[in-house]
Length: 299
Image 1 (cartoon, rainbow, N blue to C red):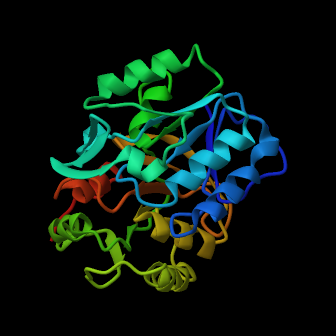
Image 2: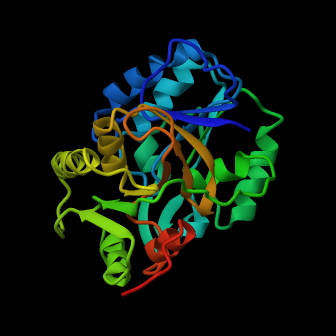
């Protein structure tokens, strides 16, 4: 199954593509902007639509859902943001992140009667929803990567095969404490270049990601890595744009919610790429990822 991620809305469905994921770049935008962005993709007329949202319900979720219901003429939206493998569950309509009570899903999506909230506390709960959805093609599915990975047909994820003799480049732009803890075990790892933003407790509107992308672009003028790891959604988008990349192919997952694939255009066409949300994983996650990419020696 060929899966393509695009940061641009194409004029038509890409030939040979089974799953097309569009990065609309609306996390920091208004609900109206999010709805308009969804409407701009209505001409693609897909057989099934999944609105991928943040598992902690950040961003203009209401606008994305309302826009998609209208754009694709869906009869109802089934909203299931849980990602149990990453500590996000929905119980009695409320979000819990690693046991901490968060907002109710209804508070976030509003009172639209077309929206049905789906509780899920395990991958099996989401798998049952994915199986049920096959019989309801007019459902709009709304969820995080937790639901997306259950929609995929059964398969064995391949092993990444980085090419070239360069180092692995790790770009960490997320301010999440989880990411900061994950960088600590990498201090003495060889064959690894780390570019990271300074620690901070505040989230900006993309300025730090943009500055980090500029650093990567300068580094890229003289180097080509055998693989690049991008941590933080805004960072990933800024970096690939800085490299002139608009498309990624997805080949599999290293861990739940940590996909890998290859850059499909731009300066580093063909380079293996791994993306990870800033808040995902344990203290050893990034070390595990770079080991999967062939980094084994330590100083």
